[in-house]
Amino acid sequence: MKRIITLTLFIMLAVMAFAQTPTRGVQQVLQLDPSQGDIRDYVTNTLNTHSEHYIFRVLHVESDVVRGTDMGYNPNVIKIAKIGNDTVGWTVSAIFNQSMWPAVWPAGSHVKMMFWHVDTTGPGSGVEPYPQYDYVEKTFEVPPGGGLIRFYLPEDHLIVPGPTATSY
Image (cartoon, rainbow, N blue to C red):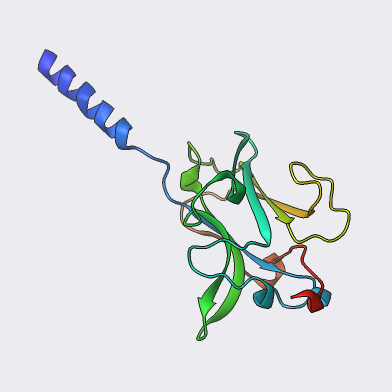
C-alpha cells in the first residue's frame, strides 16, 4: 500500500513539474486611420520579429498579470508583425500567446491589449508607463473553448496610432 501511495505521489509531482499553461494564441489585425496611409507600408517586419514602431502590452484583468514586448519576452510569443503572403494577402497583426501567463484564462475573464506608438511627434497620450507616446487599447472577453482567438474581420480591425502618410 505504501508503494502505491508513494508511486502515485511521485507521478503527481512529475506531472505538476512538467505542466504548463496550454497554448492559445490571439491575433488582432491592426490598421491606421486612412488619412495616415496603409499600415502594411509602415510596419514591414515579418516572421519572429517585433515592430520597432510600437510597444505592445497585454493585461489579464482579473489576475492583474501583464506581459509585453518591452518586458524581454521573445517575439515568438508576443509581437506586432506583417503576416501572410502574396497569394492570400498581407495584414499587420498583434499576436500573442496565452502560454506566457501562469494560468489558463477562464472563459468570461477579460484581456486588455495596449499599444503605444513610439514615433509620436505630438504631446502623447499621458497613459503610463509611456505618457509621451500616443496610445490605444482594446479589451475583450475570453470566449469558451480553446484554439486561436482571432479579430480579423474588417469590423474587428483596431485602428492604432501612426505617423502621417508622408513620414515613412
